[in-house]
Structure formats: structure tokens, C-alpha cells
Length: 69
Image (cartoon, rainbow, N blue to C red; front, top):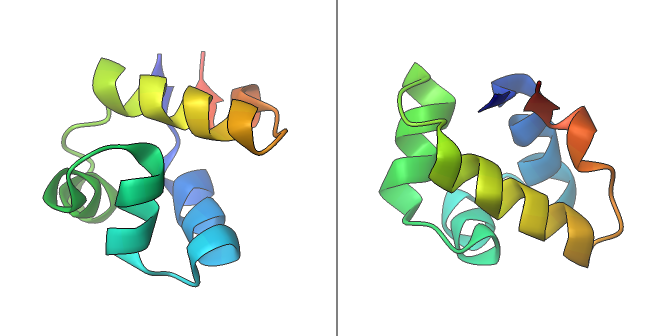
């Protein structure tokens, strides 16, 4: 499993107006971790997946849309 970068960018733009810092705070991860993952693809492992799932549950979204199974 890993997070889908394209969908996370879409999620960040829709919920946080494209603001990395706000989206990272909402996810509960370090902004540099989010920035690195979105721009390079490095770091989309379990920490990112867990934070995306929690974010989706809080916002009544289907997390499977944002995670590659």
C-alpha cells in the first residue's frame, strides 16, 4: 500500500487551498515530510497512509480513493 500523490495534491488543494503547512498539520505529519513526498515521491509509507486514513475518516471521505492497495 502507498498513498497516491496525485490524489493527495487534489485533497490538499480542495481542503487547504494548496497550503503544505496547513495540510500537514491537518494530517498530523511534519510539513517537510509532506512536501518531500508530494514533490519527489519519497516517504509515502505507513506514516503517510495512516494520517491520510485518519484525515479521510474525520472528513467523511473514502480513504481507498487516496491509497493504492
